[in-house]
Image (cartoon, rainbow, N blue to C red):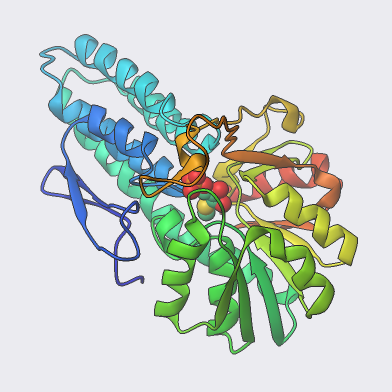
Length: 351
Ligand code: MRU
């Protein structure tokens, strides 16, 4: 378990570690309203696909708790509004919609006249989603072990650790599992412009875990692959389409191209909750664009000429042809992903 919890339900409220302040300040915020939850997802107080999925599930519990509805019909209407609000808070990670839809289908299948029972059902499901996330991440780590040599050097992008999930992490979970199983691990940590999730969050987690690493600027990965021994690139994902095309933090695509050029295996760690079989390929994945401010200023200080325009897509899509394998809690998917991913999703359901 990480020493700090990313998110936790406590005394009828959702407590979030404010990731905007890390690594220099550890501060928790307590949320009691679904509107606050949507804003915390939007402004990246909490971020990372699995973490925002679980957060949204608890947001639905808050929506039920704060609702003044006296009848089940009114409560359901209120919950539909909350679901729409939460789903709109960040568009790319499918885990958000996945978690909210999972709650709504459970609620819609209930036959009860008791609004309190609806709240308890939602809260229990949110706890289940959170617990499943941790088990899923641990299993992804174990499933990846056979792919890794005893002495293994990784490049990792963004943050996919305990902070991006309920606990343990996905791609960072693979790194952790290798370390825990006695592999000699070293990690090159992409700093991950513009929000610096690598330099701020991944480096913080690796330090606490005692795993050796060096931070590199995003543009250094090709040089590192060419001049040093890199055994694997491991990244997380925000949405994987049926054909394996994968949306993840901006810069992932460049990293995949560099890995391909240097013959370095490129692995995606993907809980099946991040696989969207309804999309045939990555062209249909909505890509969030964030404010220009994130690029032209740092910590409130301008770094570009006043008025300089910027384009800030928060994610990109790596075409499946550059992905060596996709590791889920159900196993390892290899191309052709149109066949292997549906099999993984079905297997995970029975898991
Ligand atoms: O914008 P962020 O920080 O939410 O982006 C996070 C990522 O891109 C992660 O790689 C992805 O969500 C997987 S986290 C296990």
